[in-house]
Length: 118
Image (cartoon, rainbow, N blue to C red; front, side):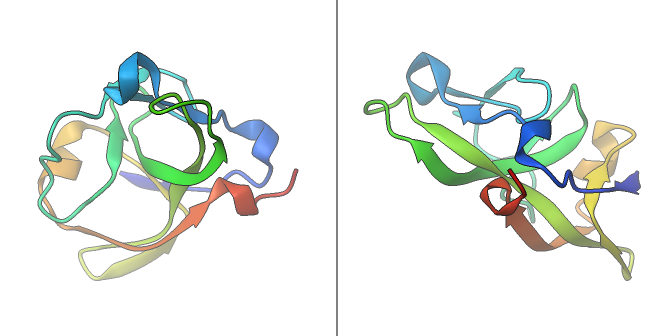
């Protein structure tokens, strides 16, 4: 796992959508669908994991309300995290799923992409 920079502009990130009646959400980087109906299987992390991008994210502020389940959201990204007592500023890029499942990561701060430059 390594630390990567948080994007600085909104144009570098997709909005998160909730297709299929909000059973899925889309990754803000690759736009892949992620099954959000599964219970979170990480003991200490309340965020979604994109297996394609190998990052954590969550729903941020509402960008547009389009109906009962078809809203559009900004993304909430990790901005500060701790692993084995070492604190990092930025996002986590995982090498593999096992690093996330070992439950040694603490999310210290997040940022909503609505706060990024236009």
